[in-house]
Image (cartoon, rainbow, N blue to C red; front, side, top):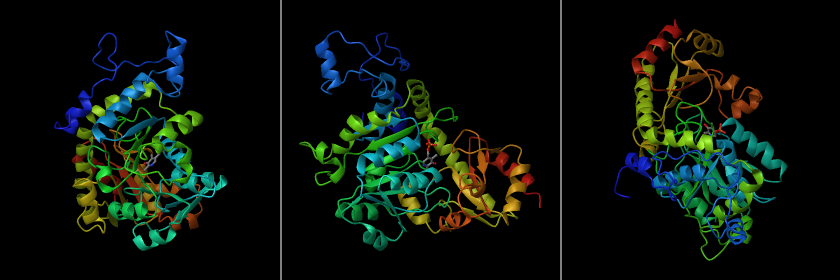
Length: 411
Ligand SMILES: *Cc1c(COP(=O)(O)O)cnc(C)c1O
């Protein structure tokens, strides 16, 4: 199957076990438990010696089919589907960390990820070390024997910062530390994280994959590239193959204990989303690039931030890593917070809503919403500005979006 395109592979991924009726679409196995013919078969399944499903908090045929499709196109070692992007992040870091460990990361993070690292993990004795990930020397100096991950977002939301993944991966690997990347802003149909040294890719599948924004979900994609032989939190899980310990602990312990597995209905919806992922991404991201160019020429807009613009400081690195279309989200600055609010209130087509990569274009003012409960000092340290608006471009035409923006700017 390796020689065919992403689009063909994502649609035609084989079932591991065909449905008894050979249904062409994977049925929704909305059943909590599966039954066994014998006690011996039951023992094999419970002890992980067979692949039979037994309980849907742990595995489920529909969810596994979704995971298999993602594994097929990413060529990953292991894929785990969870019920939100946040559960993908929390399950991963709780698999890697121990009390006394630290995570080297940036303050440029999605709001809840920041809070998870800063508040939740610190209450368990796990330190978040915030630093400038675009400065390799600083990263090197923050890593020590207790560092369990370098964690980053491939394009930070909403600052749009891009770090050099190959450089960070090399620094991490030298110090025995895996590179964990939240790749939500550019999907795996366009960006091959493995080729840039990412060991574990995390995705909020709520965004591009769900398509039409009807289901929440998260993915943990383990490339099996990291040698865990000397990794403290995974010691009991090391076996003959030193590259499997992360996925083994995740599937045998952490994900079972936290109980955040994707539900069969959501997996079904995300399988449908996967089939059109690449088409929608290319359309939405090319609209975003075109819109970014036009917004730069628009009176009343102070600046536009999109790493696909040639004058963006991250343009070259972004192009090398993510290609021509670095996602379907941009930000732009107006003169003031007041100008942002009146602009948002005048929009007629673009929806005032959070979320990213819905088929509908969505817009918000990050400082007063996602970061609204943060102090102004904290917002400033995270470079969240009162003048900034975030726009996620949907499937509308660029002309329609531009018309709405122009009438709302109403100078
Ligand atoms: C939305 C988002 C998340 C969280 O995902 P949920 O599915 O809402 O839990 C994490 N990281 C990034 C970059 C996001 O945009």
